[in-house]
Length: 138
Image (tube, rainbow, N blue to C red):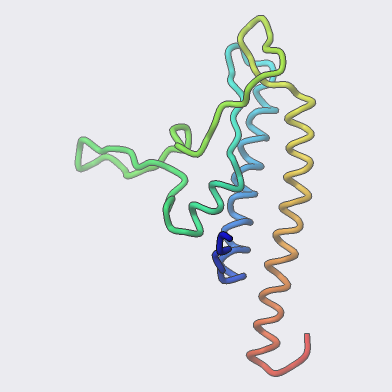
């Protein structure tokens, strides 16, 4: 029998909320580019990315940019995010675009509900800890 790792609820809630927000941006980007020729729809495997981040295997969503001059500003890019996967299209369009607006809108809506749930969960965790600290019922 596999042992289920135990995570601090506050750390879990924070990480889940950050990933849900990031996924919302990715899905929104897909919807925005639904008419852009050759655009490829992207998404993340939420469960595996969450597990990796909680275990400390994936500390950053983005990759650092290399600076070649002391006057360059440091920066990051999410375009090369190793967690972003390409969505397998049901039927790609003739111009090479793989965004299916119905699929993306469905995923966007589901992710919105899960984001609200993560926010509620995190709020409950914080209220519970505040109640324990102050000795007042929440």
